[in-house]
Image (cartoon, rainbow, N blue to C red):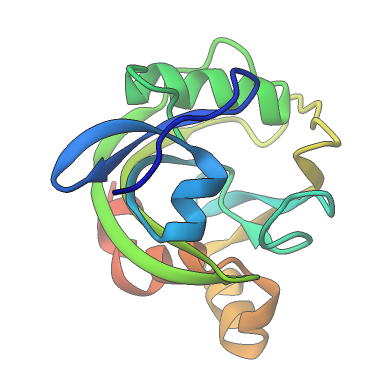
Length: 180
């Protein structure tokens, strides 16, 4: 049996244990490769996507490029509330309400003995490329806008520069994310 007890200061995320959704400490979920809930946001201006480069202090995939925002909802948190909250916490973006476009499930090795096995609620918003950003340095070390075609070419040339989930989203779920 998996011990779900964790100190109060840890982040508890929704994960399935024996088919039951339960609060589990985030790092423990990744160490065990537990299937868990997640949220991903793509902000776009036309065909350009806002990417973030993960901070070097992140416990997995530090320094890699990812979609605009990706996270785990807190236990009992609505995914749309989580998407809006994390845009603020990671990038300083307030008042934006991305649209839910679908759900994706994937499993990927993210290094260091950690596994992301996520059921992801995907959100998209069209924005002005001049959108003011104030990245949280504990979360994000850099941001950039890139066209969909250029991003696909970059991933083809240097896949190791991008998070496994971004590669999965673009390779397997692009039609859902980038549909008009």
